[in-house]
Image (cartoon, rainbow, N blue to C red; front, top):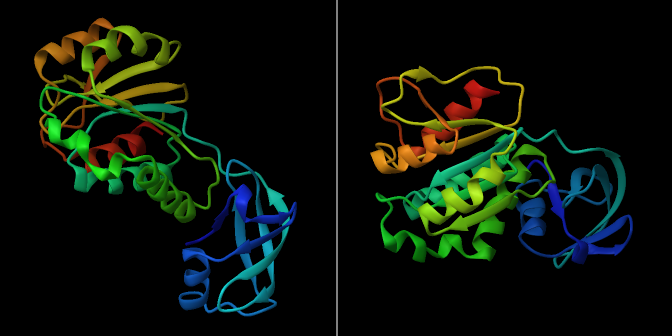
Length: 235
């Protein structure tokens, strides 16, 4: 935890916060903080600052905060990912949040098993839990928006044109002939399929929506690997 992320319910006044949950446990057991120490803090969807530990007990720690700067600039991307295996979801969310993705869609695909949508990792509390872990790692405060779309065709036909409007539209596909572009400066919408890629019908629908198929080469990567590699090449 490189930064303690604070929410409205943590504040007892505009610049004073009280922590009494897992963040307190981390500060006590991992950071071994003492009264008078300073730690980095951030307000959810707000600024970053420095906090003085003004009081600490076994039950809580009180922080006096001075706000100093804005959070890091987000990546100019909307990321669309075919829902991966449940055990990968939490890692992918943490990684993408750490890298600065602020708009993330998990969508259905022919290769996505129906049972994946029943995963407890897709519940709102679990999504938020992994978002927070990613933000704390990156010293960021801006919570990403995570959207779940269980039907491929209605999403692509009814929502995707507006989502991808005025952006560079790319779909990562093992059968693509165009290499993934690098050092992109413009707003981008990137779709990543399940392992092995989208089926031909799905690729056709995405191409019909103005997307261009790009590739990372001959190797087939897992989603949790492909996503950060693509973001690194693009930005």
